[in-house]
Image 1 (cartoon, one colour):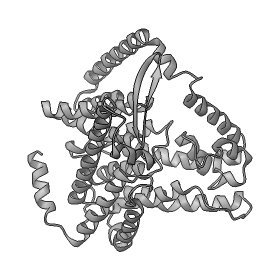
Image 2 (image 1 turned 30 degrees about the vertical axis):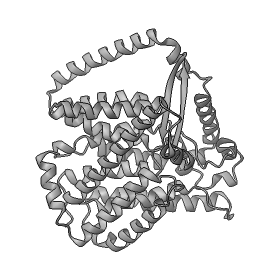
Image 3 (image 1 turned 135 degrees about the horizontal axis):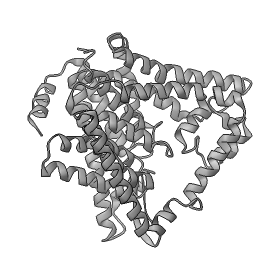
Image 4 (image 1 turned 120 degrees about the vertical axis):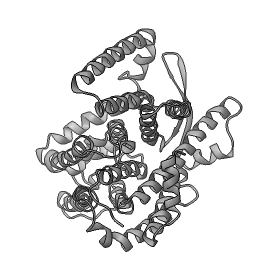
Length: 421
């Protein structure tokens, strides 16, 4: 731990009552995210939600009036407006029919984003980032441990527990005759955030220790076995490097560096594709089961969007119960949404609300200046996570909201606009 982190740790030891409430609630959320993200494990997830509800209930009105205008705007949009809009549209679209409510991920995500009112000063920001680091490093080491066990035996009780509770998918995948490990924790995409942070740190000041932390996260992401995670293990470092250079170089020099890097990237991809053509061909083939499912989902989405009312305003929640097309889209396997995150958002809330969401993301990532150089990683980190969520359901979940809230809280606070004591 560096000097600044040690100083903050000493300050954190002297917490106010409000900060103690935040510490307890945030700790439970991050622990639940690590060991019980689907609520089928040791029973930490839902108690953590309850504690969060009590914390928000106690602090909301005191904190809300002191928040930055951007924080207030996104909180009202994401946590209040979107769920109400989805409910109202559900009632209108279904002809006021009553169904068993199934679109719970959007409601729970809207509620969970309320945790950001607990992360509004330097101490609580430090606590939240510290909890993020600890839990995600635990995930990194657990992935490496499972990979090591796979060469010795089938695993152990710990592996069996995570598999039975639906948190871990442990297998292998084969592309072009090459067998790759598949150690996929459902929260493993969050490692993008840790990789962005560690990459930023090493660009600020190189050390062997920081290099090791970057390589560990890259390996853990690659071992998770999904094509997107493998891609993001490289792309995140590249994006963060460009972001770092952009923050400190003149325009002409930056253009030269970016042009050279893009040329090298193109050559690398060309050589890689030429050398491993069968691997790339299998991984991105339209005949691959996962790719074929996404293509079919997109085709059905376009059919739904042929109705201009649904495209502009959305279908609202629970469209599965009254729309035959949505029933065909989602299927009968117990899922409530597809993996096409942003198309799914448009299906539920409409393109107008998607444009509002896109406006918020563009503004917060590209047009707000984070003043603390140590925290600037949150913007490229959030950008990479949102890109990874395009073809995967990473955003509207406990882990997705923790990523979103962690990055946005730092963006809102580190611009130096407000302080909640």
